[in-house]
Length: 116
Ligand code: AMP
Image (tube, rainbow, N blue to C red; front, side, top):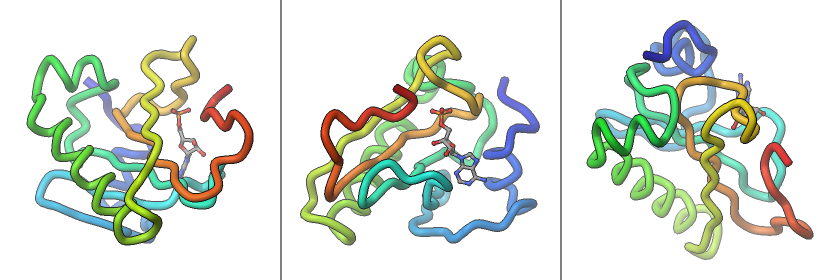
């Protein structure tokens, strides 16, 4: 169970961010250190899942909702095409243990990889 992470505080409204998209169960906001022309984080409001593997096993519909929000953001802010990255585990580059999708679009740069 992910608890007391910075994204949990963002999801609960304790830490304010610019909300770029929101559904009943998902919010999206800009990454503080963007690695592409468009770099948005999509997270579930629940802090129940630390990483995407846990989420896929526990609530695949919520994972699908995150992808749908990513597509909507890419449609609204770019050409509808996007790269999505989930770092799953510390050795894979995950630093915040509240599952989040990095959604990148626009100018990705040469070999842009979050956490690489
Ligand atoms: P990861 O390394 O996959 O866990 O990604 C964590 C991401 O969160 C990084 O890309 C950070 O730049 C981003 N980040 C950390 N704190 C904030 C914050 N307060 N608001 C927005 N993005 C953040």
